[in-house]
Length: 290
Ligand code: G1P
Image (cartoon, rainbow, N blue to C red; front, side, top):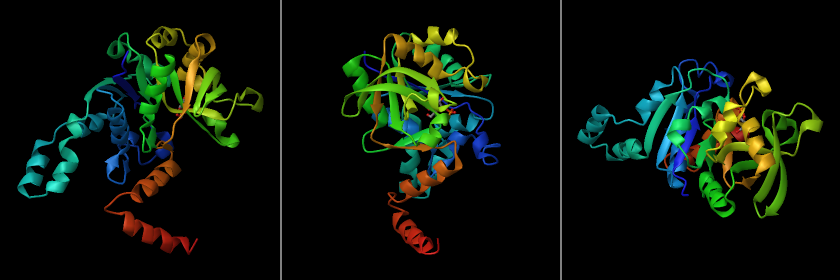
């Protein structure tokens, strides 16, 4: 079955980026000139996704405004002959069919995803974690969809992380199949001891799940941090039918983290036609003083 639906959990409080996120949703923090959630929506669209559900919460209303039309601004740009600027906004509301649902309670990623049950129906779907922006020539979601079509199992987007960071992620037990593809047979969310770490491969920002995940989530009890963890529900899939892990080719930026935001801004800025020359000069200049 062709995958056309994506769910973007974007309901978190953004505490690691306070005070910037006191009134501003972290998903709206910009990377150069676009809010981070627009990069995620664009990745989905480039991967063949047509329908997106964004899971929000109180204070996230401007995400909806961003993907809506802005007739007054559009008219002002057109009347002022600001064609380039007009082009930068004219298609944002046409990117995909985007709907929204509030999580209501902040009980973890697994709980947020369970809110997508009616939207998803009986189809496999993509989960694109709202904090994780992935930039690369081939969209990461497309790489995962290709693996789903080949192996017919749930798929995890993964990367290897440094040993001293694996405790922040979902750690996977994997066997290499070929190239960048692995079979995943077990996983653990936020391993606290060396013994608990299954490998340095971490779930990083993307997965494809079968609709059976919703029944599993209904019976998933709170795990790490007292939250209903998506990893705990996916573990049930991995240990029974198995999952496929794909080491995607793009670079992942943690937009829930100050350093991640700065790295994304620099990397994207160095490729951005309008600012790349000035930014390169500036970086060279300050590098001399570091
Ligand atoms: C979440 C997931 C975790 C994953 C991480 C990065 O953790 O629970 O499995 O490895 O995102 O995508 P969080 O960053 O919300 O603590």
